[in-house]
Length: 81
Image (tube, rainbow, N blue to C red; front, side, top):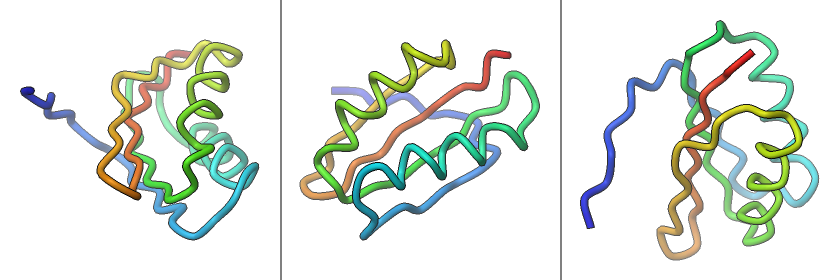
């Protein structure tokens, strides 16, 4: 599988945080970004996978990719508005 490379403007490390903190911190970080910028968010909570998919649908920001790297979850989110 070829993994896409993204022009990441911000990285948010939520390792060790449990739901809902990765979503809360992602929301706060996205608010500080410019439209079109990409956030990389890293989490260790397995619940982050469904949480981030639901959050992206709800907020209409674009979840470009989510990766399960064996205990570490990596998300690439594009600010759309």
